[in-house]
Length: 229
Image (cartoon, rainbow, N blue to C red):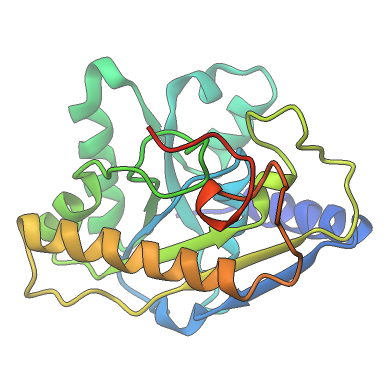
C-alpha cells in the first residue's frame, strides 16, 4: 500500500510535539512485528490517541490503519488526511462494512488499530470493551497487541481544561506482548482488557507528574476526573 500522506503527517506531529516540549515515552515497540498483520488495541482518553498509539509501531517501521468514526472522515480537513493515511471509516449503522475493510487490510499484511471502548473514557479509566479486536484477530489469525496510553488527555479531550498549548506534558505509550493466538472468544476479550488495564496502571504509576487533585487524574488515584459510571 502506497503511503504519500502518512510520513509527512507523522513528521509534522513529531515536530509539533518537540515544539511543545512533550516528554514522550514509548516502550515495548519491539512487540509490534516488522511484517504481517497484527491487531493493535488501546485504551482511549484523548482525541490524539491514534497519533501516540501509532508511534508505538514506529520502531518496527509500520503504519497503523486505525478504525475511526465516520464523522472524522466527513471533516473538510481531517477527512482527506484520514483517507490518505488509509484509515478505516466506521459507520455505526453499517458496522459490517468497516469490519470487512479491516479484514481486507489485515489480509493484505497491514497493521490495524482500534479502540475497543469505542469512545473516549471521561473518567480516564478503561471502560468495557467491544468485541471487534479479538474478532478481527481470530478471523485472520493475527497477533492481538495491547497498548496503554497515558497523559494524552491533558492535551485534547472532552474536558475544557485540556489544551494543545500546554508545554512539557509527559505522554506515555506502553506496548504489551502479543496475546496468545490460542485464546479466542471471551477468553481473548478478557485477556485483552486485563492487559490494557495493566499497561495503563503501569503508565499511571510511573508517570512523572503528580496528579493529586488534578482534573486529568482518575478518582481512584486522588484526582477529580468524573467518577466511573
